[in-house]
Length: 331
Image (cartoon, rainbow, N blue to C red):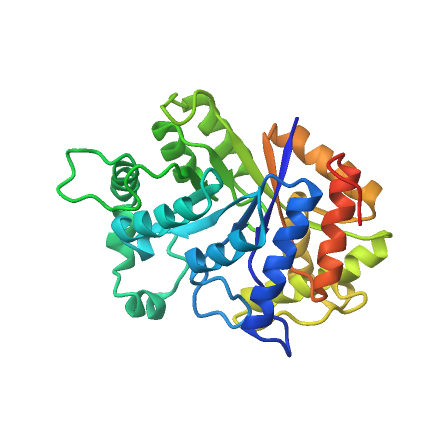
C-alpha cells in the first residue's frame, strides 16, 4: 500500500513573521501525524524571505518536540553547502533526541546562487563534484567506521535513515549505486521523472540499508470541498512560483480568485507543466489525480507539498486528502 508524507517549506506569509511560520510548522506536523502521514520533511533554502527552514536541523528539533511518532527529516540537506562531519553531528543529535524517527535526504544542488555560496564559504563547482565522496563519508561517520581518523559523536552509530534526492538522472544513478531510497522532486521539476525512476530501478544494488528499490515521488497537493476552492487555495503558491521564476521572490501572498486566468500564456504554460505532478481539487479530484500519478510512477510513497496562506486551510487540505486516500478521518 502506498504511504503518504509531507514536505513543508515553512512558508512565511505576507504580513507574518518567522516565529509565526515556525509555530504553524509545528501545528502542521502534529496534524500530519494525526492524519496518518508517515514522514514530515523540511527543505533547506537560504536567503529567501518567504521560507523559514534554512537552519533545517534546528527546525527539525522544533518539529520533533511537537510530535510523537511521525518520522521527521530533511528533504533535504544540500550537502555541497556543508561538510559531512557537521551534518553527522547535527543529525546524530536529532537521532538521540528522537530515536527511530530521523531521516536525512541529501541533495547535490546547492540551492544557492554565487552570493549564498560566498556567504557559506563554498566553491559550488568543487562542492558539487565532491558530492558522491561526501555522501560516502557521511555514511562512514554514521557507521562509526574505524578507518576514519576522527569520529563524530553523537553521529557515530546513529540510526539515521539516509535518502538520495534528485530532479535529474544523476541522483537516481547514485542512489542505485549506494542502495539508498530515492525521492524525486517532481512537484517542481517533473521533466526527468520517468527516466530517473527507470534508471534507479534498473541499476539498483542492494545494500545493508535497503534490499530493493524504494521510490518516493513528490506532488503538489491542495484539497478543498470543491475544485474552485482548491484552485483558490493553490493560488498563493502559484503566485510565489511565478514570482520566483521571474526573479521577484518574496513572502507567501494571499490567494487570488481566478489567478491563472490573469497570467500571460508563458506563465500559464509553466503552471500547466507542473500540473502533471499535482492534485488540486475536491476530494474526488484529488483521489483520481493521486491514483493516476501512482499508476504512472509505481511510487512506494508520495510526498505532498503545498503552501497555503491560511494555516487552517492547509491543515484541512491535508486532512481531506488523507481521509479520501484512506488514511484517517478529517477533523
